[in-house]
Length: 272
Image (tube, rainbow, N blue to C red; front, side):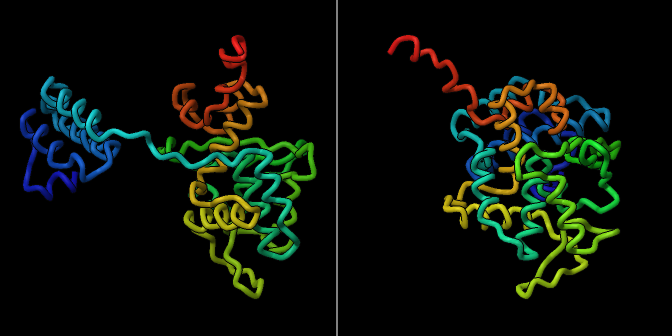
């Protein structure tokens, strides 16, 4: 709405005015950004009791035209799959930064948290139980009211166990309160300041590069996508995957599962 106001426009808007606004943005902003602003305009009109101009055929046709002309496949972070994650972890040693990054990568993968969610975790959000670890996610992108939810992290069946990695990091950093993941300087000194969401992406990219992968297409989101894809490949049900990721529907989850079924029983295998 701030952007709309900056164009010297006000509410209520006419369908013609909205269509003109959309056309002005076409080619300058991503289609997803334009669509998001149109949704904001629609909600603003409804909230103020005005007729919704976004429902008009003129606005719908304008948006269809923009999608046809400028729509491209949404850029997605490459999923960091299980075997690739193991390859990354195998390069880590026992330096303080390695111990922290091992815990961060494994927890990020096993909980499918977003980078900001990982960065905002506190020690008090963790509960170690007989079967592993419970992580209390207090608020997320899809939970703006802060109802929160619990994510279960069982003990791992391989040497790469997220629960043990977190315990090792907590013990090393002597954490008993406050931020879980903290900054470390080049001398290995651990600060009391939490890392940022951007730092999570930096860890993923740098560790990917050290393992011999091209980091260009990876980000903090690669852990979340990697969990969803790897779990689907392993035969986990959509319901169990969504228990971890927090997705409300299969449709929203499917955007995260990277082409997992394309080669499984592909039709061409029945021909050639």
